[in-house]
Structures are given as C-alpha cells and as structure tokens.
Image (cartoon, rainbow, N blue to C red; front, top):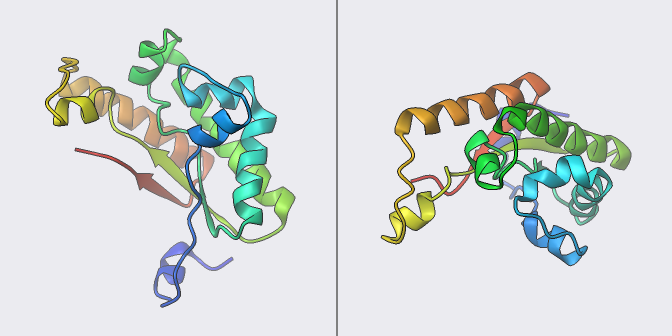
Amino acid sequence: MKPFRERLQESRPMIFDGGFGSQLFLRGIQLTNSALANDLHPEAVVAIHGDYIAAGAEVIETNTFVASPLHLAMAERDAAGAEQLVRLAVRHARQAVEQNGRPVYVAGSLGPSPGAIEADAGGVDFGIANAAVKEAHERVVAAMAEEGVDFFGIETMF
C-alpha cells in the first residue's frame, strides 16, 4: 500500500467509511458509549469495518470517537481503561483489513470532549478543565499511535 501522503496527492476521491454508532444500533447493540463495543462486541466491530471495506471504503476509522477517559467516566466506566479500549479498537480495524485483503488505511478517530457540542450550542456547561481535556486526548492519541494508525481523523472539534 502506498503511503497515505502519497495517496493524498492523487486527484481521485478517497472513500471514507461512515458512522459507527448507527451501525451498532442496526445490529441491536445499544450501549451508553459506542466505544465499549470494542470490548463487549468485538465481532460486531470487526464486521462493521468489514462491511465498509466491502462497500469500497479506502479508509476505515477506529471505533474511538468517544473512547476518551472523560467519555468513559460519563458512561460510569473505569477511565483508566481508555488506552486498552483504544488499542482494541485499532486491532479490530486492522483485523478487518487483514480479513478483507484490500489495502485500506486506518484512521484513528478522535472526537470532542464530552459536552463540547452542547456547550458550543449554548446548552450545557460540563465544566471540564482544558488541562483534563488535553490529558485525555493525549492518552488516546498516544495509544492510537503506538498501535499504528495511519493518520488521525479529528472530528467535531471546537
């Protein structure tokens, strides 16, 4: 597979996967945090990635949009397990790529801190200190990088 930066130089569009949480819901999996599926429903996570690859995606994104320690704490889960959950997510994405046999890039999904969307819309102030948000993102990014994502998909940041 050619390096991602080289692929970006091509003029043809790159097909990215779609939503992850919605695909879990379609499979009857409803969790307080979609990243928990990496541990609780690994076969479904791999299958969702596989479906996107089969549909022609050249990039799949890890199931980590809400895997930060802050999100896990809001879901009443152990925030200390964030890195392990992220590592599982990258491994599941890589497993789907290997099973499919096509060259597909794996993007590490990094979503906003809890309440960012609501606070930006003027709704809720979660009062999460910037230092805590920075530390949470650093932990997730480090785990993704160590597991070998091809690049980061930074989504819905404010």
